[in-house]
Amino acid sequence: MTRRTFFSLKTKNFIWNNMTLKKHYSICTVLLFLAAILCMASCIKDEAANKECDINGAHVIGDEYAQYFSDKSKMNINNLSSTETNIIFEVRSMATLPNQLPITFDVTPGATIQPASGSMQDFTKGPVTYTVTSQDGEWTRHYKVEFKEPVLPSFTFRFENVELSEKTTGGSNYHIFHEISPSGEKYGIWDSGNKGAALTLIGKQPDAFPTSSIEQGYAGKGVCLKTISAGSLGIMFKRPIAAGSLFLGKFIIEQVLTNTLKSTRFGIPIDREPVRVTGYYKYQPGEKFTDKDMTVVPGKTDEASIYAVFYKNKDSQGNDYYLYGDDVLDLDNLLKNNPQVVKVARVKSLPATDQWSPFIMEFEGKDADDKDVAAKKYNLALVFSSSKDGAKFEGAIGSTLYIDEVKVSFEK
Image (cartoon, rainbow, N blue to C red):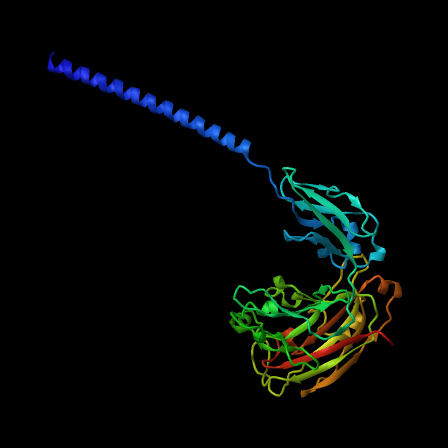
């Protein structure tokens, strides 16, 4: 055999072996690919059906039903706890509630619910029980859904019921005040500007916030409202101070930097016509009164503010109506020119004092419609502030107002 013949045979064998190896690898690749598909198909086929049977949210959908609620937000209950089986919608009045209402539910994937989501049900006779069945059909949960008219408190506010907020992003806690109804239910009818102050108060305790609870009030606990610096962020946005405030209503955090006066929404529904408000206070103004540029205003002394407004919570078109921080800057003009406003009350003077002293304010204005009052078509706004012009970001850092034992009277 010649040398050339040997190399030719060797080369042919190499090419043949290489082709065989490639063919072997191709067959293996195809087999592995088919095995993967079969495995995936098996996994999909064998995947267990969902065993969860929860209601995650409940909704009354339809503008025609909004009239039965004091606020459209109350038509939706979201993010229900997995341990909660009682769902309660708060309505303006049970007396006007229709006997057929639909509720739409968000349930866990694959689960079914009976009675059917969106079906008409009668809630005027008491709770309706809904049964949720898991996708695999092995698990069920029973939910009681009902509509309730809130039982208003006695309107003697002692401020004994206070709790800590969850920790803010900056690691702070602040105080939240609420009322307990005669039947033991908790109502968060009070709010403050603490949520907004939390943007600048990093790692602070509750007593560093503008609104906080104190142990030594006129009788039991009381409320401390103080005007503080809003820090560099407040100065940047021309909002250098944060006055202590407490009010019936809701603080809307989304508005605090862009439209601050719209962050305070005043008023809660009420089924009685108020006549006067009484209570006890202590007050000391801060040393230096400053304007919104933090410029000291010589000779000006800070003043505290206590006032109330009784107004219609539905406009002429039947839409929800609220008063905000910019609406109440001029109470005289509000009473005279706002057709929604029925009555206004204010404490005209709160002299500085270190002793608990009584205050009283009488409502003045028009009489309300009795039928509309009974149907809770009026709101009561009640506001306390450590700086009278705090809404304009003018006042004195250090001004402190204490309040306690506040009573709204309805007897003429």
